[in-house]
Length: 222
Ligand SMILES: [Zn+2]
Image (tube, rainbow, N blue to C red; front, side):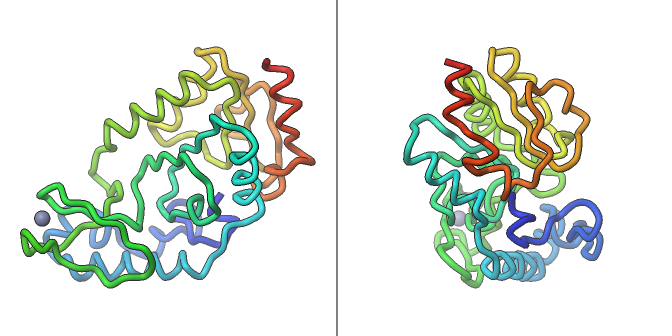
């Protein structure tokens, strides 16, 4: 979703980790060693995100959520683009660039570009509330995602390579629970064969009434 808005991606060719060393910028050890450097890097990421805008696929999702209840979004993106487009019920598996937390449990939301700051109570820097290398995913968030997937009628995967755990297990989980599976991806993925329908299109195009007549899907399901 985000790549089409121009948000720099982290993995893959031309990804951020091709030109930056995550060992110095995106793990707890790096933060403990040099918090200012790590925070500066994340401020740059937020600035880059602010230069981008949600695309029409994001906006179409917002319209859809206003028309139909029970549509939730589970994302591996950390840029908050869904929320900026007005999407609701967003489960962020890898956390958010816009959220920070302290060891004491205090959490804060950054509303726009904001220089990093310290926890008043502890005097230490707030760390970005994102899943860094070596971090485990928040088990409550995974649980929430699995709960949504267990009761979904229509599972739509958009643009993920389907290889990063735990998201890789989601379509199978949905299928096991009787959902209809739709994959939107310009390229086939390792899991394409388990989907009922594959739309080989970019997200900004596929997420539209023309290519994804959702009422038709629901009339088949219901
Ligand atoms: Zn604190």
